[in-house]
Image (cartoon, rainbow, N blue to C red; front, side):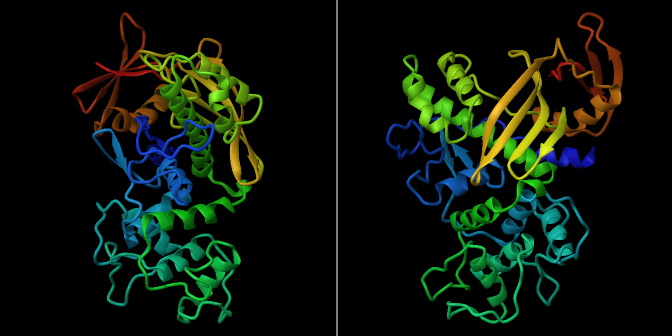
Length: 404
């Protein structure tokens, strides 16, 4: 369960920013940029948006604005962190660099990628995680991370690439990941920005066969698809409530869903209230509560999971199916089951394992100890004492978690 906890703690994105921000609205579309410093007309919008929904990129929030800092340089530590989480890697003990601490947020990423031979340090034993990443260094780590075929002394059209980076730049060119900054220049010594890094990662990741996804990548794919449908519906409600029509978002919704889910998403959109319950579309699953992979192929993903109940909404179990059309994963169906019909029926041991993950994420409390102290006399839900001071109620059948 440790791996699942690590996966789920990364996957949980919380509430997306739904406020109106800098926009570049396409014809017959209500979509707006979710970032105040990047418009939808930018060639980098979709790559950055995808990295954001996958939680590879974080935004800075202030006064109803979300800053993604697209032109900020990527550091070597940043790059390792991005690849580690994008590929859903599990920690491996690698080389100990003298300028890193175990408390650094990129520590596990750098250690793991070093153990896999994806990244190198310097001869003095340092990694220099705060140094800006060059395009040449980027070519090596992406080529290595995605296991591209490396040719010795290949021929390149770029005249400014040294022998050290030629094999890796050639690999990216062969895969269609880069075309250089000009027909004859790659600019290997130029620092790479967040928007450029997002574009490289986005292009590389779209080529990964679905059948090779690990659990993290499956869950990331599911969450990105559900988050995109939710954003489309919310932005449509924001623009059109209370006079929304299916035609307002049909074209946008068809970019991320297919039948029969397309019709359901559009119908739920009409039934939604912007001022009360927001978009009545699929919420994020809580994969820490339940995760069962039923099907994984290059063109199809089927996952069983659950959305826990809370004090406002009833949760449910669900089977979600995604299909890959060209290089886009779209939701095809969501079949739900109420907890009355199919309760979670967790054991106390499973509940404690889940609470170790959920309490820090949902209640921002570090868990040092958990004790089960029995059922509540009135409600009948299970009670757990955390850190010998905080009392939590947890329903084994619905996943509802409350702090008393």
